[in-house]
Length: 506
Image (cartoon, rainbow, N blue to C red; front, side):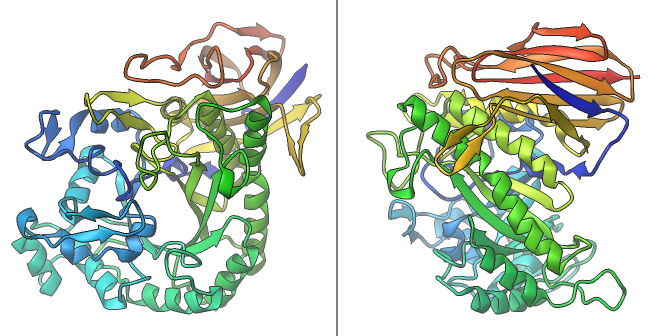
């Protein structure tokens, strides 16, 4: 039996709530038909924004929302999306489906959504086809008070007060759809753009440079070198940007043969989970490079695109990236969250791709009936809310089962993490084995605990998923497989399950 030793009285780094961030791109039915239905829709909405989507996401306490892309960001010109909607110019979304974009959902609509969600805005600017002036003026338009050309333009469009917009992406995937640049060429551009992204008033910008794809460690090193001296003493030069990004998607095989969302073999399941676990190796290696150039960890790492990427559902537009979401996807998410905590001193933000109707979505909306479905991944996010801004607790495994060898990777059978905040603790446990149930012991030291609560997310089959006809096929339930033992707890973990244990600490 595996034992996890957890010292409840030794809190570590704070695990930022921004590790549970989200991403909404002008892609498929994420914006139009997902968030935005328009004021004239029969679907209940507030100023055109779908009310049930807002309610569902508010229950997750989502900390931030990234917009408008993604690849779309580097062909988006923000001034096309302001002013009266009937006068906004149209464009072609060349990246995603080659469909016409009417720009009805623009800056004001996005900030309206941010306010309805009670979240923070992460705006990704256009480096690939835009200009320094264009992005600089967007910052001014959104965040400046008083009087200036962009302030007057904003007021003409109906918004008197500036918004708070802390997070700004300096382009997206500059190595690919954002311009096919070399690392050095982009590093120079990022410094230039960051210089002209001004802090206006008390709105302090957190500038995020477009970082590496998967294991391009040379890209990360080039960006860190381009920063200059970021030592711990007062002679250190402030970095022009505050973070660099990283993108990593999980599949069952190679990019050209991603696999299907709901039809997969046992071998494909285990390959998927091993690839999900690979994020640990990637974070370790990228953060090691960052530590070399920035030992005091003044520059953050932002994993602003992660999640599963499957073949699109049959009969849907291949450029819309619509896929179903099973218990397998939920476990991919739980593994990521367990690993994120290990890097809480450097990893500041993560954004799952994407929030509605695209890739590993929280929410699926039916285009014919308007029905809303919460996915298994949604429930993992909800079950993790107590980890937001909590102190990470080390989880030390004793007698862990031998990892399964999957190609050149190794997959542990179990995954765990823990955190503490406000005289409480949350312990997350995943059993990744498809068929074998396991029981673990929690050796809880340093503080007494009284109240115990447990919940479980699992399914009869790991391929199970939610639909408008079966919206709760995979949904969390109270779990009674938890028992007090000397020094802690025993917890039963059925095959392919995710369990959270909450404790009231004394």
